Each structure stands twice: as structure tokens, then as C-alpha cells.
Amino acid sequence: MKIAYVILSHKDSTQLKRVCEKLTKNTENSVFIHLDKKTKFDPIHLQISKLPNVYFVNPRYKIYWAGFNAIKATLDSFNYALNTDSYKRFVLMQCLDYPIKSNTYINDFFNQHSNTEFIKAVDETSTADSINSRKYSMQWNFDHCRLIRGFLNKLNIILIEKLKLRKPKPLTITINNEECHIYRGWAQIALTRDCVEYILETSKNNKKLLKYFKNTFAPDESFFHTIIYNSSFANNVYKKPINREVEEMLNLTYFDYTTNIKVFESIEEFKQLDLTNYLFIRKIPSTSSVLLDYIDQITDGKFTQQKH
Image 1 (cartoon, helix red, strand yellow):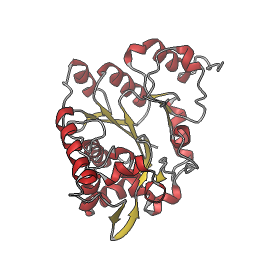
Image 2 (cartoon, one colour; image 1 turned 90 degrees about the horizontal axis):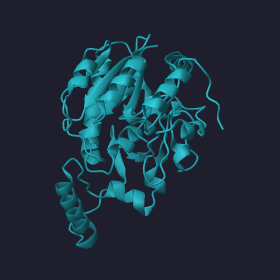
Image 3 (tube, one colour; image 1 turned 120 degrees about the vertical axis):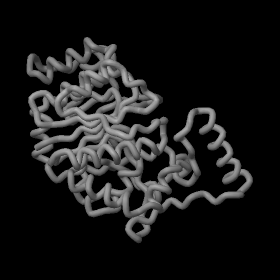
């Protein structure tokens, strides 16, 4: 099975180079990188571009936290990968994600789950609380610098909630002429080729879908989830979440999210984790090189991690 890894990157080219080399080592897998347009293409990026089976995707967009440009970058990357080779699995990763299993293990895992869609989501239309419903009912603007987006978002809150001059958006969306619920999950997903083709086709044929999510909060946590959970591919989702707890919602990428996403830096804190059911971890920067070396020794079979 050939795997296409899609990485949305905006910093730490040293870590990016390392993960590209690791994901493609002794495999037919490829990495497709969208580099944030705000990020300077440095000498290490030039080295990365010369690696076999590693591609930089154009056009480049300015990616802002919780903005829609992340969706545009992902769709372009999916399309690029589909037209490059016969990949059967598409894994969406973010900056500073790192594999914690060997390539052999990962490839075997996806071979054993060849028809499974690794994406989890909860229904925000029928079960939305007031906090989450505002992510979709309000007209959010995040594809701008902090000053502009702050002004636009405050203005929309005043117009919609205070002055009642604009109506909130409905918590449903029309897809292929059917009224559909909104679903939300985490951004790290791993999809089959058929599912990715369906996403691209649906996005192309439903312009109102793009318009709706363009002004939602963090559409990378809902755009793909809404498309898939309102399609036949929902039948192939692996272990749908039974509650909204962070770990219950995780797919194949482990992360610790209490108030902020934890940055892992030491071997000792890594040893405390039960990572049996995960293929990747978030976040480990290049400055944590000792920890990255430790993980590589585990995945290369040099020794087994002993959990405390």
C-alpha cells in the first residue's frame, strides 16, 4: 500500500526534514507539503525539495489559526497527490507531528484496515451546546492578520447578537441537495483514496458548502467531518466516539490538550504515555532532538519502550 502524507507546515524546517525522511525511508510512500505563504523558504526547505518522493504543493496560502485557508491547502494537496500516483491511503498531518511506529507497522496497519476511514466526529446540529454552536452560527473571519480578524469578528458579534441586524447561520448545510447536520472532530485524519476522491468531487459540486465553512470557526475540525458523516463513508468510520472527551475523539495521532496542546520535550514524560493505539504524536519540535532520537531507536527496533 502506498501512503500519501499531507503535511501543513509553517515552522521548524529542521523537524519537517526529519519527518519527511522518516516517513519515506525504505517505502514507496510520499509526502506532500503545503508551506504557509507567511513562512520563508529557507535552505533546509531547499534540501527537503530534493528528497525523493517529497513534493511542495502550490499555490501557497497564508494560513491563520482557525482559518479556512487550511481547507484550501488540504484540498489542493489531496488533488496533487491523487494525480501523482496510485496512493491508497491519505494521512493528514500538522506541523510538529511525528510517527511513533515503524513504516512497516504503519503500512501493515493500513493494509489491515484498507477500507476504514480514520475520522471521528460528534453531531453539532442536534447536540450543540452554546459554545460550540457559535462556531457555526456566527460569521467568523480568521484568514487575516490578528488586528483585522479581531475587528471583523467583534463587528459580526455586534451585528448578529447585539443589534440583531444579521441573522445567525443555520446549524445545517445542504450537500448534494440534501439538508445535512454539522459534525466536528480533530484535524488529524487518515482516509482512503475513494473517500478523498469523494471529498474533492463534493467540494467542487457544492459551492455553498465552501461558502458556509469559509466563515466558521476552525473549519479543519468540521469541513471534512461534515462531508464524510453525511455520506456512505460514515459506515466505514473506525470506532465512532461515544462522548466528547479529548482522548475519545482522537484518531491515530496522540496529543495532550488541556488548555493548550502540550509540547513534548523529554524522554521521561514520553515514557509515561500509553501510545499502543496510536501511530503518531503531536507536538515534538526539532529542539527535542534527544526525544526524537529515542523514538527513532524504538521504531527502528533497537529497543522496546518501557512504560513506567
